[in-house]
Length: 229
Length: 105
Image 1 (cartoon, chains in turn purple, blue):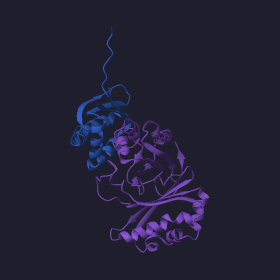
Image 2 (cartoon, rainbow over the protein chains, first blue to last red):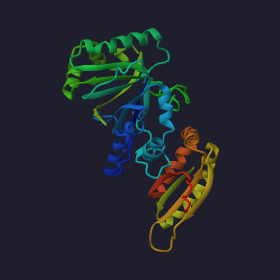
Image 3 (cartoon, chains in turn red, orange):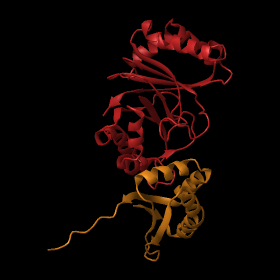
Image 4 (cartoon, chains in turn blue, cyan):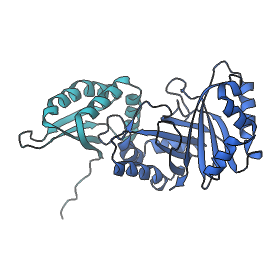
């Protein structure tokens, strides 16, 4: 499977009605392209200068390639996004905006409702595979000790550079090399996690660089309430 | 198949917009694989904003997907897009596919 996120920074003068149209276009995508699974749209509640997140998935990667050439993608979704499209309402550049995603065997990200949190991580090239595996084990084990954390997946951000067909990189390594995708039952549960005594929470409180012994050099977070299609 | 962009521009911006399409726009789109078809405008002498319609051609959405990839990877495309955005005040993009008209019995 491919899990995918598009994170948008909206133009400050984007009309509210057009923003709602983009949200609806993303939310309804699966109705027009059956290969698009688990569509949900959320408004970012973190301090990152991005406003909208569209989360979805494909199984298998061939489904992603069908999405890419489907009229709904080219005609409707891209209408709001491509740099030269007259109806564009997004802007480039702000930290956090972009395309992220990873390959997974099962929909372990799945959550009916609640709060999604994405932590974008930059893992240094000098970090070893063993160090990343250890970090993954620590983060993915969090739901066992954090009440109401129902999803925790750490994965390499392969979609950031393989956005054309989901598999083949078409550009250099992405700025954010890894994603930590989480799901919480509520905003209160997320807040309780932040204040709690779990190892990941303690790691975050001291800062990712220090907390991971330099394995993660930078991080940015987004979180939003999940609203499905 | 045709991609038709119809943009709305203030009369004083028409010349700059046409120049942009005729230089950077044509170069970027052609290098990406699209074919320039036509450019047309409404009148600039009637006290209204001018509509400029630019049409590009390609075989189908499979080819468009390849063109789109080439565009996104071309830094000039982003310059083209941001300059065009600064000149227009609105507009639409539509994809058109030729159809055969029904024949009368």
